[in-house]
Image (cartoon, rainbow, N blue to C red; front, side, top):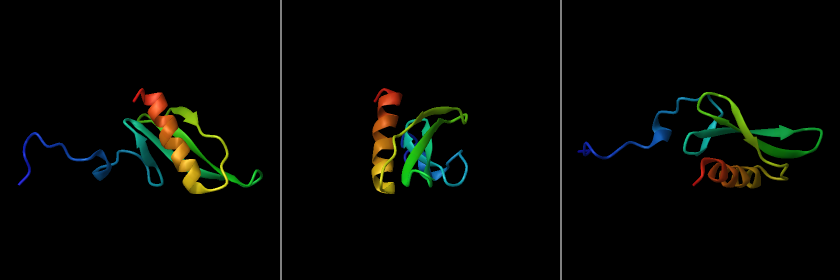
Length: 78
């Protein structure tokens, strides 16, 4: 049985569209592939859908996601 004080993780009920991932508190993002440049980047948005940042170009999707987590922590002040 769950305690009244135990909050459920926010990823159980994402209020954002499909394909978006949560990278920080209140910050979601979408991995995109830049075909012309041949790399991946992550566009970050706040909960309202306003763009708040973008990572640089990375060779792998995993590196782009890691850069997005670091950038979201920096933007969120964590």
